[in-house]
Amino acid sequence: MIDYKCFELHTHTINSDGQFTTEALCESARQYLYDAIAVTDHNTMSALEDITPELIKRTLPVIPGIEWTTFFGHLLVIGAEKYIDWRFALPENIDTYIAEIKAVNGIVGIAHPFNVGSPLCTGCYWDFKIHNWNNVDYIEVWSEPFPQERFKNNLAFNWWTKLLNRGYKLAAGSGRDWHGPDKEDVLTSATYLGLQDGIITGVTVKEALAKGRTFVTCGPVLHITLSNAFGTCGLGETAAAGECTLTIHLDESKRRSVWERFGLRTKFIQIVHNGTTVQKIPCDGVYTGTLSLNLSPGWVRVEGYGYYNYKGKYNIDDHKLLVFSSPIFIGMRGCNT
Ligand SMILES: [Zn+2]
Ligand SMILES: [Zn+2]
Image (cartoon, rainbow, N blue to C red; front, top):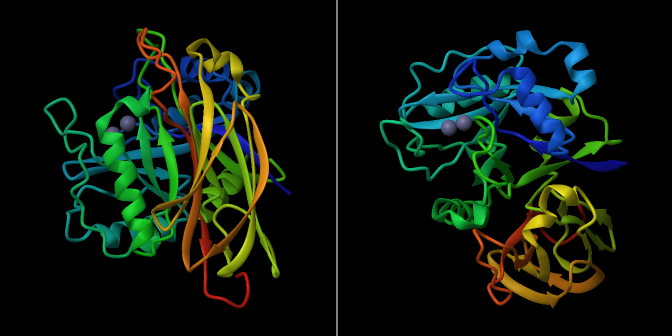
């Protein structure tokens, strides 16, 4: 059985430019009610020396990662079994480096692709030219707290959608890019990963990201399945084109203490098929229902919109994206694959 768990996939410690010790990061993550985190320091995995069984027992599971931090972009590498030298990666040859990461069973995620580069954030903007998208597992669509308020995240969301329309099977992720204790009260996103039997290990986490079993949220949780004459598919799977039933469950029961002070409320759900909204369903913080759809080859995802309090501004007519799923892919007619 697939069970979804809550992750923060992009964090830093004093081993690179973070303010957290590894222990302080793990303790803060536990207080934020994440089920686990990935540690992704810039170009180093030194934090792993701090991650003892005792620390994990006291706080939460930690998945090893690294953020390749280059002049041409930042790449999140999760669970690679060997260090790959990134120093000579160039826009023209990045496919070769990504293939090397895949060869040592690492997960590849593009970090904050539209961050503006600056002397403080060298190479944050994604300038690498990828030809083989099959080796990229996910895009960090949302970056930093209050992700909906950041224009760069709109650009990343649209880019991800365009890549899906071009036929690439890319999951969505989010990353707080957590560097230290919060200076102000912030609403942050999380990435839920669909893990085999809900068990958190490097293997199950990598499998969920590789297979696209993810959804990104600032609060609500989403569960989606698509059924047709050939069976039932979940996120990341491929269903046959044609008549189907999409089952959606959304609720706001999880990790409420982390976000409820922002007055967040989901007010409608949108079904997006190949980049176009095909259904819009009103709800009020909870929805369970089924929809009959006739889908052509491509993909379908579910998005939840609503409102929340941002810096004292609270407009219940201003609906913002609160949660979105990775796609269920739609193949040719005939059978689910
Ligand atoms: Zn970065
Ligand atoms: Zn970072």
